[in-house]
Image (cartoon, rainbow, N blue to C red; front, side, top):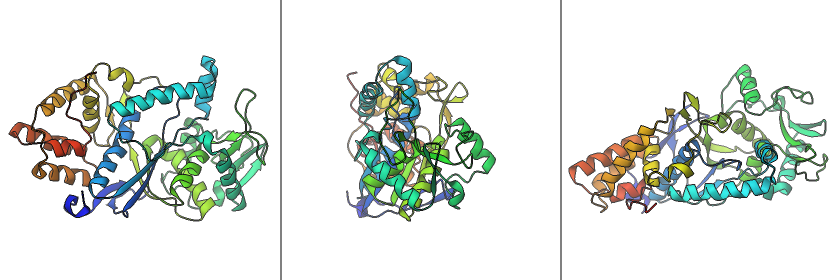
Length: 388
């Protein structure tokens, strides 16, 4: 559909994490996007699904507006958590990764997600990572210590531009999220690792700084730059990645290239269960692969769309039952496309991806006997109930 046909009431507006406000999102004909993908050591939970669904709906609306989208979603297939889990269960880390990637791909397909433009693995980019680290060192923004290479946050005055956190909060989050601020080889507790020596049972690659493996943050920077260029239109992930991951990505990427890394940051709020964020470390997970055995995957999709991407919410079984009933009503409605229904849904999506309002518009159309096919398509909801 052409941009002229699909545009309603001005440009799309999205909240920008770094700017801390809703601003117009007006990319060119080609929209480049990077979303942080899975570390494949466990199955897809609803928090993952909510995150990737947000960028899926965003892409659908952008394509509806006439843009081409290129969304890269990486796979972190060498990482502390993956190596730890492989060690615990006694399998090779790449075998564990392969099994979980297969399950993740099946979950994404069942939920109707658009396929990514590229899905590169960290292990595919070791040469690129070494070159990237060399560029950061050459820029005077990193140093060698204790067999590792660290980014020097004191050399980068803009550190904090994404998260806007104070130092004490950064230190707390770094300790909580694998940043190891007590590492004695660091000049500053907030410095972060670019290259690190491997433990005896971990994979290692040769480098100018000794054998080892990349740090977490450097993998995403390298893959994003390799696949999409120096400046990306939009970068996203879960809100728990704002710091340290995305803050560190921005600092090291801009140090290496001298260019702005991201034009627009969009983050997905956490899904909670039992009063805590849904996470592997806490074990309070609802796995998509199990849930879709019980209910049509489109009902899961609708349940997630019923919550605004910037609002944390608590999962209860009633969420899925309500979505199941809703989906059954939608599947029995007129499936023709009707701009009288689709245009208000477009307006809702252009208003900071207001998917709950979009669902309400479709509910009202169903109640009035109006066709909803175009609106459902825009949200990626297939109206044919799954045989599963």
